[in-house]
Length: 307
Image 1 (cartoon, rainbow, N blue to C red):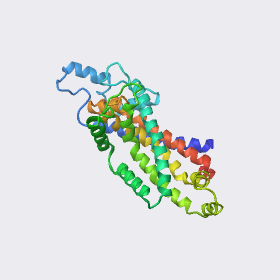
Image 2: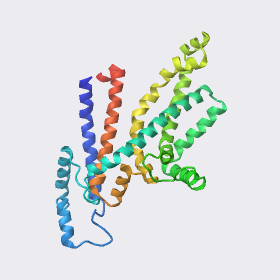
Image 3: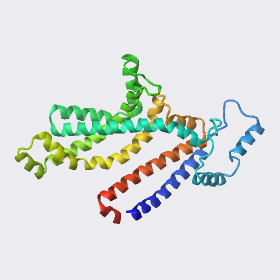
Image 4: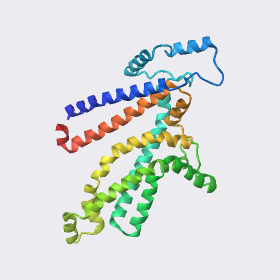
């Protein structure tokens, strides 16, 4: 198991390096710079700023300086937010991003599994049709459109919930962002759960359990639920990484103080250091979550270790 884990870690390192390289050169080759504003800076001030951030060096030299800093755990300073390093800004936004993503993950998993079981048990009946319709809405409507619609209906017209902003510890401020973030994933989980449960309910051992007079609730919880969960479990790892990275858009729609706020502000201001730092953070997060899922597979099925 340790050998398999070591091989998976080694295979993730080139992916991280490629992602850093692509992000670095796209940012550097894009038009404009972090010190371009409506008012041009005096030439000597601009030259000093470029020298301070190594922007006066050839692009390859800048690349190796940056990669060396990343390897030593230094993501560099922000070029726009004064007196803060990129690591400090990520540390400030990370707790809220994690809280939002994990709340959406737990909600999507619970609601998606329950909806999938209800739809499978009532196959081709009105609860099944209603749930399929709700699922399709969650899949086809993009989150930026869904966010705007929910803000308009529940925040502006009905005034039931805050349309945006954040008050520390206020659950009503989380309802709409969590709904927008969790709905598509609850929809995908319910589709997986419905299909898997219908397949399990048609197997011989379930028919045998029914012939013995076992009640439907006991048959579902004791015999059908566990095998039906396998495809759902395989989705949860990538699903969590999608939720955490998808919060970038949702945080900006609702004006929330997570990493997404810094990422979008940095992109608009061409803050090379902060954009690269948040990109590296999310790449590392996705790689770690995928690695954990692979290790879980290898633990559940030893044959995976030898492929």
